[in-house]
Structure formats: structure tokens, C-alpha cells
Length: 297
Length: 300
Image (tube, rainbow over all chains, first blue to last red; front, side):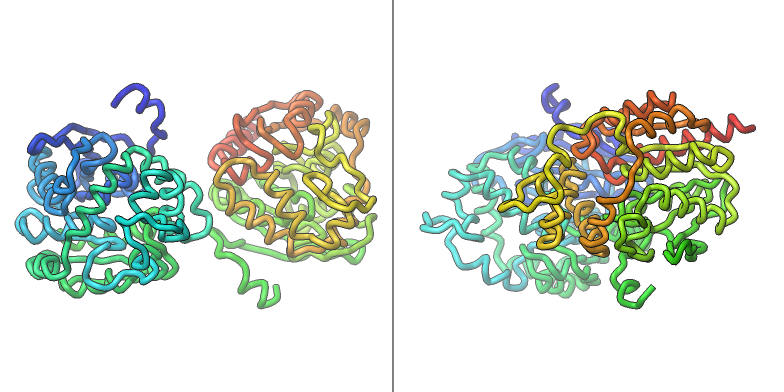
């Protein structure tokens, strides 16, 4: 961390007990370890639009009970920003996650994945069944059920003659009005009233990745097909808990419900929550995570 | 409490252990008591634009250590809403506080007041030194020093064509757009970023009273400069003044002047606006607690 970064970062309720880099095929990601309880709770990265500080309401609480592991995924935070769509697939994130577990001597963990993090969390649980004791997915962005129709109106690739609403989810708009896109996107992510602080945090994290890189990471996620992902889900053997806000404006509750069904997991619908219940309703989510992790012992 | 209010009220971190009404000259005032500890801390009401829920971030913490008493000011909450200016004379509010102390069998209390509440707290502390063991003033609205130039500086009685900024402190505007005034006023009270919840709460409490009540309070007799100076010099119990450096309602000169005039301790809260106890509650609560503990040590 450069001095400038250190000065800019907000104070934390809890600082890591250990941290370091893991390199895999030339790409470095940055991990942190908090606490030394049992078992390990592994807070996975999500889409590279934000980095591991988005777990800041979970880390201090969970680290009082468990060993907590998290890392900045490729593309944001203190991780590298490789170029190319192939660098940002769910398989790469899953393999990075495994490499972080290896580097930190983490034999098994309960994984927690948010939004896109549910993609690599599922891949990790399916491909490395002996390493994942249980999986919690929050607001999963998985292609198992249709998305909100209003997100499906405009092309991502083509230049549009409007920037109304979800038309901002467009490569040309990102390249020209990146900060406005971030403000719009995170405004949708936090649909609850009084979310100005959470939106401000996320916008500033979003500015840590260049729009060119974010475009590549978006295109990589588009490659995740329904049938292939359904096969992955069928190979998950561990207990699964899915939490999904019924006011989620990014990904409908139906997606969370479908993931719970496909993995044989339990669904908790969070009334009134948007896409980020762990940020806007952290006490409730932390208690649900803790109960679930305790049940794995 | 009528059912409609009960249904509307937010859930509380802590509910009162006892509650009741006192009545003076036909005006009923509603009080609450929380906890059993020693000593008693009385959270004094402020301007009737809000009610006792303005202390919601103090009550649960302080009640774990002390006995906490608060009440809704006449004009808001579950208290009556007289519309004569004389009913809102600061001496009436101070007498209400004393009556609540009596009704709750509270021999002595540490007073914690906020903004306009400083007037009634000063009257009570100076006039009844045997009932007050200490006084905390948060961003006091006491005329010992001028306000920032613009605040409350436009004619209150005169109608204008438009009402921008502080010109909204105007009876005619209140009668046509009360909510507009409340939204402006509380946006000035909470100048810290991310204060939307605090502003929304206060606007909601403001809407529990009427512009007619607030107009009456604007005409009521307050403690004037010379009297404030005299009362401050008389005050016997220890004083703590907490003053936000970014107070956009009162400025910081008034808090500093009150600390000097009362020979009290001054803590400047860097970056805080007028509602410091609502936006930086942990810090303010710890300062209140340290102060209460220091009084207890002195007494022992």
C-alpha cells in the first residue's frame, strides 16, 4: 500500500492480523486474515467494480467468532488489473480463491459470496468439494432465472442515443461518463432510504478500476451460460444458505430462489432489502451468517 | 397515546420503565423514565419544533448507567399544544422541568440540554441549585454572543414574495409551507454528510406540531443577554459545554461564551454541526458520562 493510499483509506473498526499477495499465472491478488477462530469464513470478492472493503460491516463481527479470510479480486483494490476478457471469468476468480486458501494454510472454509461472487463461490464449492464446508450466497447474480426486464432493453456494446436509466449500462457511456454511471448503478444497488454513505463508499471504490478494465470484466461475466452454470450447481454438495432482498433492483429474488433450489440450499428472503442487505442490514445478515457457520461445526 | 401514533412510531432500542403526565395551569406535559442507576440525568427538551425522541441516541446508553428522565416540551409530542405565546415563556418550560422532577420524586439531577433548551436549563440550574448537580449544554442557543450573520436575521412578521434560505423563518411562510421550512431548518441543523435519516426524523417530529404553535414559541419570552450573563455567573453546579465547530444554526461563539460565563468546561467538537448528539452520539455520550462520573466523584 502506498503512503497516499494509506492516508486516503478510511479508519477501520478492525485491522487484519495478516496480509499478503498471491500470484497465479502472473496475476497478483491481495488477501487479508482477521482473527483465529474456527472455522474459517472466506468472504469472496464480487464483480471488480468494488473491492474487499465492501465486507467492512461483516469483518469486525465475524472475526470475533471465526477466522476471517478475504481478498481483493483481480481488477480492483490492491490486486493486479490484467487485461483481456479471459482474465475475468468465474473460473479465474474461483482458482484465485483456491490459491488464497492454499497460501494462507486454509484447509477448509465456509465461503460467503455476494452478487457475482456467487458465481465463483459455486464453482469453488462444486470443483473443490473437500475444501468448502458450506456456502452463503447474498443477492446472487446467477443466470438461473430471468433478470429485471428493464435491464434488458438496451445494448451494452452499441452506441445509444439515450442515457436514460439503464441505458447508462453501456460501454460507450462508461468510457465517457464513468462516474455518472457509478452513481446511477450504486443508487440502484442501495434502494433503501438513507444510503448516501454506502453509495459514496462504493463510487469511490468503483473509481479504483478503469472503465476499460470494467468493460472486460463485464464481458467475461456475460459468458457464463445458464446450462453450464446449472451443471455446476448440481455438483455442489455442501450446505447452502441464500439470502436475497425482495426489493433487489439489480437481480430479482427469483435468481436467489433458483440458486437455492439448484444447490439444495435454504432461501431467506429479506423483506425490504435491496441488493446489498449485508451493507444496509448488517446485524441481521451477520447473525444469519453466524448461525449458519455454527451449524457446520 | 392514540393508536395511530403508536402504530406510526418507530421501534425503540429501549422503552421507558415508567411514564406519566404532569399538569400545570391546565397544560399537560408527558414525561418518561428509563433505568434505575444513580444519579438521575434529565434530558431537557429543546424548541417545540421537536420532542423528546431527539434524545433517542442518548437514552439507551445513559439508561444503562443512570436513571434517565425526559419529557416532551409543551407544543409537541404527547404534551399539550397551547397557542398563546405566554405558555411558551422560558419560565414555564423551566417550571415544567421542576414539576417533572417533583412528580418523579427526583431530588437532584444532572441536566443535559440542547440548543434552545439552554434557556430553561440555565433558569433551573441558577434558580434551584439544590435540585441541579450539574449541567451539560450542547450547542446552546444563548444570546451571549451573536449568531452567524444570516441566521434568523429576516423580519419574521413581514410577508415577502419569495422565501429563500433563512427568510423561511417567517410566520407567513410557515402557514403556507410548514414542511418547506422544516426541511430547510433541519438541513441547516445537520450539515454533516449522510444526515438524511436525522433530517427525516426531525421533519417528522416537526410535523407533529403546527405552525400556530411554533409562531407562539417565536413570540414567547426568552432569556435575554443581560439575564443570561447574570444567571451564568450565579450558576453553582459544574458546567460542561459541547459545541460543534460547524454549527450552522448558532455558530460556535455562543457555546464558547456560555462556557466562559459559567466558568464551565468547553469541548469543541471538530466538524460537528448543531445536532452533534444525533450525528456523533458515541463521542457525546462518553463526554456526558465522564462529566456525570466526575460530579459523582466530587460528591463522594
